[in-house]
Image (cartoon, rainbow, N blue to C red):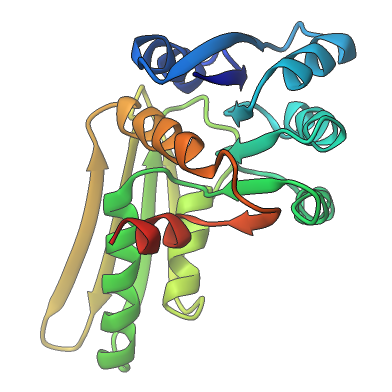
Amino acid sequence: MKKVGIIGITGKVGSLVSKLVSEDSELELIGGTSSKSNTSDFEKLAENSDVLIDFSLPESTMHAIKTAELHNTAFVCGTTGIPEAEFNKIKNAAKQIPVFYTSNFSIAIHLMASMLKKCSETLREYDISIIDKHHKNKKDSPSGTSIFLSKQVGCKAQMLSIRSGNIPAEIICDFCGDDDMLTISHRAFGRRVFAKGAVACAKWIIGKSAKMYSMQDYLNAKN
């Protein structure tokens, strides 16, 4: 059995990851860290895990990647809002350990990204807007997903973020021309879709060589 540690285990997504890992006959849940954990907790978790799954805040992510690199532990991260300088440290860690990063673990979102890229290449004269809706406690705005999707259209999109209630995640992209409009959207019914994707990617990355992996790497390997 492969051993899994969870960074942010008490969070909304982290708790779902914990449940899915516990139900998986191929995995063993070692434990996790929370906002109350100290450096030794991160050390112990990384030392005893084959892979760490991180859904936390940037500060915790930086503690986790440092200890994962020290103990040669694979790292799967879905934390968003990480400053560029800090994200470069994650990239550097990927020279020593396998690191999987994506701002969104839904496979459907990555199919949407492919569609947006194709649409932007064809509908060159259309105005593009991306609206991301999330729960009111989400820290980063715009979301990591909307930033990722904007890159698929060459960062030409106008972006709007809405933080309200308990919306898990909804992304709407409009291509608006003089005579018509094309809308492509994705709505998560709950956070479980992100937890499922993270667990699947964690199982896949264990034993891989040191590199920064993306959802596209995962999808290419599965097809």
